[in-house]
Image (cartoon, rainbow, N blue to C red; front, side):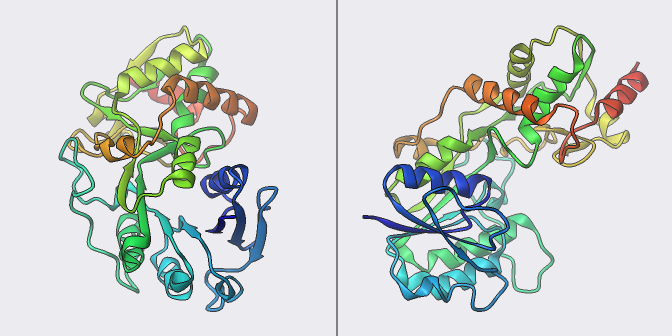
Length: 321
């Protein structure tokens, strides 16, 4: 039987990976603080990765697979040092944010990366991921680095993709505020497609694990259709939105998925390696259906980590005239 250690395994993505491996007959152990439960069928090693002895219990046995998704380079460096010799195979879930080039359309895995974060540097997500990748690469042909872009699906804690399901659903027959969509694109991957790939692939090296490129306007129209929104939509000018304190991409008072016009490469990266390695992509409409159902279950007017409140949206629409 294959034996896998997931550094995490109780969160959104790592829990999906654990569940997939268990369903495939793998013996799974999750190493986590224990604030959340491990998936049914998985063993749990309680450990705080800030603790120098966090990996002591896991380091007493060999593992066919170790899977890590941490966004802190120090966690990954310590894990590789403690467990690298015990792992026949190591998978690290990095990010498209590791790339420094956000302009080139269709860039593949050879695109330049950020300069790796050094110990003591102020935290920046992309450089942290690069430093973590560097640690994993020391395992040479035992290492796989997957670089997803925006991961979406039911239960998404970032609230970005789901914002649009909520925005169209909560508006009823009212107006919905959109960002500029002309020439803008988006790429996403369903969390379950990513989990299935991580669980199944035997590849090594680096792979962009991301969906196909879609026009942003078409994706927003799909959300609108699935939600049954029959009100108007108004697309505001980029400069006007910035002047009125609306953020790009994510976070409070934002319009998620919207990116600056000059970031032409951020959501247009090549997924050819993923496709050729058997990576699958479910129809985007299926993911949107699942996300809308999840948003309705969680409450479309709930407090969110990304997007506008309906009150903020209506205030902006009133100012826009």
